[in-house]
Length: 167
Image: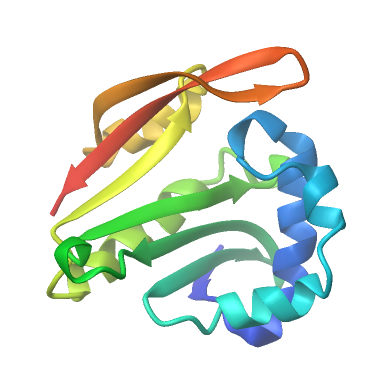
């Protein structure tokens, strides 16, 4: 398993995996698959996102195929630059249990630690996603709040745990 910072040349592979994530785990993301496929020029948008200052998207590659991803994004406002957020975390089902998720998160945390201003990392996770919560807890993220009915997929509501890692 190779972990690397994604570049604009990875945009197509990222978009393919992103659509898979939205289909496989719709409860885990604010964006729906239906919304995503209606975007104009999605590959161009991804290329731009992968070049945005303060955003770092890492990919897990297995035999040169992108099988996992995570984004670390530093807050842009002066008063909030001490904060970063983890989002768009996903590992393809065929690569789960191989350590890709942990490796991606460690890479994102290490990147945050290398940025002098960042003092903490926040993330949100569906409250029923026990495997993800266990992984985050292993890496010393702590729950600081629960948002009830954070997402609604069809007629089902999902709560989210808000977690923080102090660096």
